[in-house]
Image 1: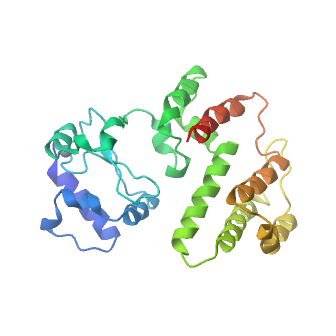
Image 2: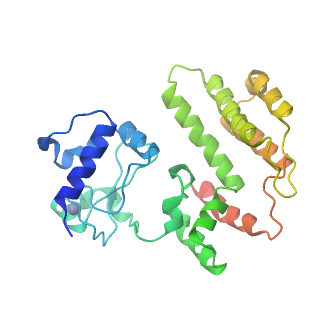
Length: 260
Ligand SMILES: [Zn+2]
């Protein structure tokens, strides 16, 4: 059902989060062309809503059409209902072919954007979920524990820091990615370790932070940074997986990175 006041309130909320004054005449289809960076900011703060058409508030999203604002790193999805899609002539846009079903996979929606797998494997992950009758929340948690997600997160951090610090040299950014990973480890350094894992000690983590400049010195690409961090996780035995379930899931997820 069309609901203009809902979508107006939504626009007002987003504009005010961006510090832009909302006016009635801004209520048109051009609001979708806010900068990709702005949409990313809104996504980071969890303000994007996916349950209704971003133009008219209609919550019947039968074909699952959506638009992605240009230059949005997170590829923020703005749902468009069938009526608006046709009315605005978006049908000619390439995105029309991608038929994302918004109501479908809850596990996908709970994941932070940087852990959402490519659409080409969503169905396979969903099959995996139903084969083992996993709860959506549990599956989302599993995804975030895979080696695949560790890699995804590092690439995400690279882009994020690059955007925030456009003047930094590349190696300074790599260093910062390593340090932020170590800071995450520091947060749990004093907790009892997970079963069978052997986490780095506080001193070892601090050592890596201190040596970060030396560590990145010989790296030639960011892939080496990612592998370095992944190796630490493997050494810590973070991917403890007696049932091989995590391994299976990881393989499904990794297939996309090979395909793309
Ligand atoms: Zn609409």
